[in-house]
Image (cartoon, rainbow, N blue to C red; front, side, top):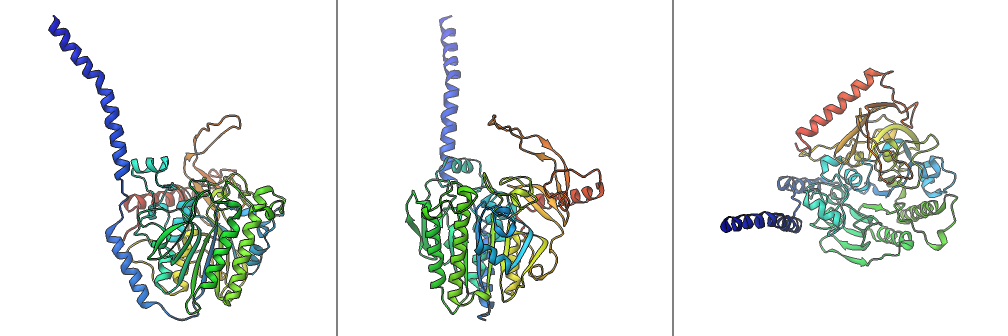
Amino acid sequence: MKQAIKRWGRRLALILSLPAFLVVFFIGYVVIKVATYEQLDDAAHMQSKQAYLSALAEQASQNMARPDVVVILFDDLGYGDLGYTGNNMIKTPHIDALARNGVVLENYYAPSPVCSPSRASMLTGRLAPRNGLTAVPFPTGHAVDRLNRLFNNPVRLPREEIIIADVLRATGYHTAMVGKWHMGDHDQSIPTEFGFDHFFGTYHSNDMTPFNLHEGRHGAGETLAVAAPVDQTQLNQIYGDKAEEFIAAAPRDKPMFLYFAHNFPHVPLYAAAHEHGRSDAGLYGDVVQGLDDTVGRVVASLKKRGRLDNTLIIVTSDNGPWWEGRASGEAGSRGRKGETFDGGMHVPFIAHWPAQLAPRVSQAMAMGTDLLPTLLQELGLPAPNDRLLDGRSLSATLRGGDSPHEALYFYGAGTLMAVRDRRHKYRDAKPIVYATDPISIPIWPRLGPFLFDLKDDPQEAYDVTNRRPEIAARLKAVLDARNAEMSENPRGWK
């Protein structure tokens, strides 16, 4: 009897010890997985990328008629936050002047409703599932970064992707970036490893810690330039100074490319003492007016360089406004940052290039993925032959032509949420956030599908499927076909 009791006692002790063992095993697994995780790059397409860039370098024209290119990208700026889009509370005279003398696209969309996928898509010409960056990277070592590593989520832009700076540098451009990168802070996925000769700025959003500023040159690495905490009330001055320095120092015997990606008006909001109280829209409006000042400084520097007429200046935003800001003009839009309703992705777009583009306002629909294909056509360069581009050239559109797209695709992370044609937008049956002010936990009921008439109903307020079932069916077929294509070839390799 005693022996039986001892045997059962040992068995019970073993059983009770199993949970502790499993906990220790699980913790050990997590620690090792996070510590050893490595986001893999595609070696074959890395080679294709290098071969493509080398071929561009061999065929690049040395004709000095090639334009300088400046892309100004704001963070969370709403379509309706500017004077030229109808805002009478915020004064943006420098941006308005570019709009008045350039091409305005009134139906232009950011490629994603959040920043990192949007930026990656704009620079690569490939939507988030194609370019491999479907989520926002957090600083290395952050708790969210560790979770992403644990679940094999992307933590940086894959190195095999080709961005605008890669192409322009290969063809003889002097390239620089000022501002927010937010597509990786390690493993060579930093700006000077993606075609930028010079970088000054931050790897992350201004609400992430530590908020440092880095500086570096191609081939020499990047080092800490301003340690956290950065005085963000001086960010306009710091970024404006660096943009002016780059433009002034750019060689006169070669074209230049400046990617000026400001952190504002992403929260937290800061303004210098002399910027406070200038607008009628509170601190947010003061910040936007400060951004307009930086645009004025960039334009003045381009005039000093003597090539403003042959400089293509693009002004846009990475997604719609977040906690403040006007999602659209007087008509208004449904949704905000993070949502694939128009308020989260419909953003301002200006193309200013006096030597080539006559001032006009266009209703043609376009998306941020179109920028790389447009530059390829303007410079007479071939697209990479090993990958699909989601964007289409806007060269004809900017000169008065129609949209090159039959449909635009609205992705939230890696999920296709909606498609639109020239008039209608079809939203698949998807969760929609609903919250009440006193309750901090929202619900996400699955609703739809919906068909919206964006001409008569830009607020996406009314489902008209029952009035136009044939249009809903056609756009559903477009959405289904895209999902099938992505399922078969998600990265778009040829």
